[in-house]
Length: 96
Length: 382
Image (tube, rainbow over all chains, first blue to last red):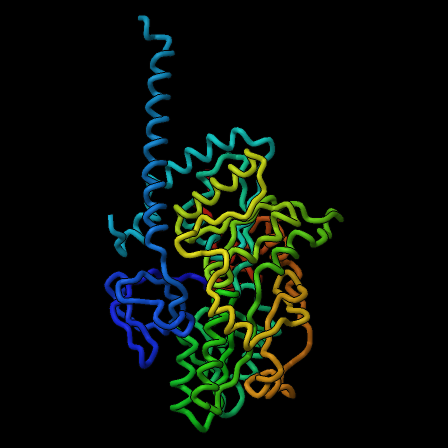
């Protein structure tokens, strides 16, 4: 029910206060009634819910999250490597 | 790197990121003194958690309690009966969102009403009512409005447009509910089985899109007054994993705070224009009955009295049923929503109660805990 779809704004009609957005290749119209005048621009990423733009997606924050994820994958891989080395070091058959 | 639309889909569902978080959570959870029960308030989160098999990725000391955040599931039969009765009136077109199609009332669902000849229309957007009203000026178009804070401003925008365009034949039946009140009810409510207050919930995952509208500020009181951390999470599986990790870190570091994982969309203040629209047209009801949970004070919204001319409950007061309807005796949805029981513990789960013929609230929509277990529960078998 509360699911909403990230989309990119491709057109704005100030007369009808509607935006045309691209949702992964599908084009659709969305009302801008919940957004301040002039707040949404072409090229913005927005969240769409039952025919309305409900907010803009903060690009910088989204990119920051993606960076964090990369770091976490690296961190966990690093932990795995350390663990593997440690297990190898402690392996009782090592001396054989 | 510039953000692309596909990043917003693919990267927040990335399997390697989910695995990395699963590892981190397992390591961190070893440092916990006690097990943690996390309630994901929102049905969208329940769906993500079950769909991606997240319970299987969790260590034994991290459990989920599936919350009541599915507006379709918690809709009591009394309200659905209202929609049914309204739809059966002469010269009425009942309009609602697709989610409501199959929800059974005591006489049947809106789909059944349609089969009996009622003009029931399921729309994508509330604004579709405007077009229907213009094309059917000899009829009343009644919008049966449902949803949490996420969907309330869209109903407010509909009234705003109706007034602006001076459309005379649109009425609204309001069933909007609010999240903080039910969260408080779940913490405070007395557990009738063990005669104690419900202390099952240790922390909350805050809803995604309710928070986009209302801002994270609506949860401030939970860490402050109820000693329950809240982490507002996005709907994608990576969002959920990160938010769970944030909850665990709070417990390890002995913090109890409101945090936002979903900061690409949620601010402290939320969407002010949407809140102003809600404020303009709606006020709190004294009580709203939640299916499975009963009456909760101040948890529903109604139209302000100055907009009574648009209120279907006022216009059709004489024909709307007022009798209370009991929940099914064997159904344990109330216990599931309070975290006291899980869906498979219910004697009618998957037998008498299925998604195609739901008896209890949690089986009604795909976002309900029982429906999610029914669909994805095999992922949980270890």
